[in-house]
Length: 426
Image 1 (cartoon, rainbow, N blue to C red):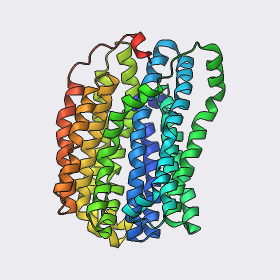
Image 2 (cartoon, one colour):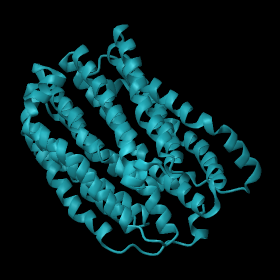
Image 3 (cartoon, rainbow, N blue to C red):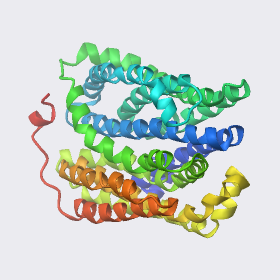
Image 4 (spheres, one colour):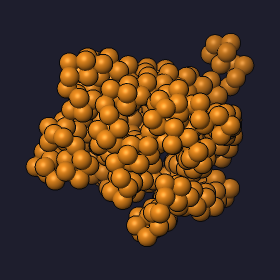
């Protein structure tokens, strides 16, 4: 342990390490989206926002499978050693790849209707989007291995710094070459494919050793797939469905303003993500060994608030200069709504941390209840969409309700862990 680790404590040090990588990576990611907004006109950027929103629905949903894989790897490693965890992951990863493969095929088949629905000028953009989604699903599950083994330094580099850097470089090249909307989406595909290779190639020798030395283990691919669906829905739905609904019910110019608003507003959502990323395997390990999991949960809650509240205050005080600096004067209509949107994202970030804590302590009923409440966003926006502010207020009320629902997951004592035989049963 370094002196800095000793001073801050391991949990805080690892959280700040991943947070730093996320901040830099998100800055590069937002720089990329700002460049896209400036290169494309407002109407085309509205289409990009809708398609990127669909991509991030899958990308954020894929993080649920990252959490599930991290939990399985963390439990297996804690009880049977790292090699057993590696073998379990490798068998699971290949099966999940086959499960994810239909996604790009289906999107290619429906590229015509999708491109018309989002006002895209090319079906090729939707086809490229499908393969980008497939690549990000694979990359997220690969990152679950690093998270479960608590290799946070490598995870920070491969998972949160490398992809946005590659996306920015590839995106600049594609846009400069005149590929427009299709090129902007192709950059996402290139970034995730390279990140996936970098994440797993260094482990090839350990995978080979684990395959030779460890006994056969079940590959719980389908259990992870179906168990992760409720969390995937909860992660992806509230932060992206609003962009898709706004694209449907508002004019393209207003949809472009909302896309810019959502693009920057999610800064507040992404800041606390590092906390839950570090928290989950620690909570899983302590819960599996029956050594108490509430302390890392409380640490995660306080660190999340400490990371998100200061920038929220700055955004609330200076929305106009922030929007104009990043997106230009043509997007200034989004300024009055930026603080409200960011507040909504902060509450959702806390909800996500609490739901992941509940899952780590094997209380899945919380995410099921949260999913049921979150579904109310669709009929609410369908009925009430007189203005962009009204859409944001619907999101805010829903997230406040979720917070009241999720807080007991951390306050109440977690139940005893299930037996080892149940953990590894297919």
